[in-house]
Image 1 (spheres, rainbow, N blue to C red):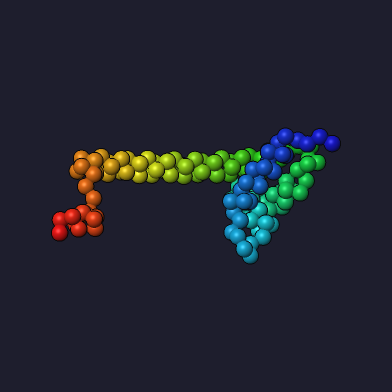
Image 2: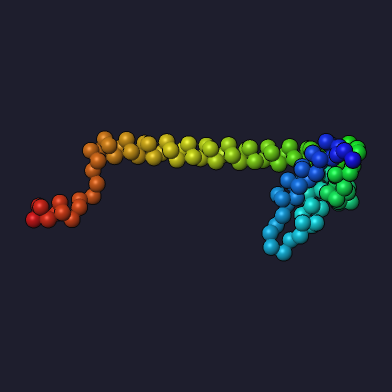
Length: 122
């Protein structure tokens, strides 16, 4: 039997959404999958069918596929936005560190007096 490419993609998208919904210890994969299904606008029964039978499915319900694709798109957008925010924060930290290094260099590398320098004065 050949696997429908849409069914395989739907399974992968459902799997990604399920992993995002998983709450850790005490949660179940089925509960996470059902939450992901509801957020995607499909029923838990439709998600279960994709989950268990994607290998032998010859066709894919367009509404199920569309719901999973849209949910996956939102998940990807959220990840990209988070990555952009982290990149901006990292750039800001690098700029702050560079400014602090320039200020320290302008002060001649002044550090607090060391114990040996204080002994020399005495």
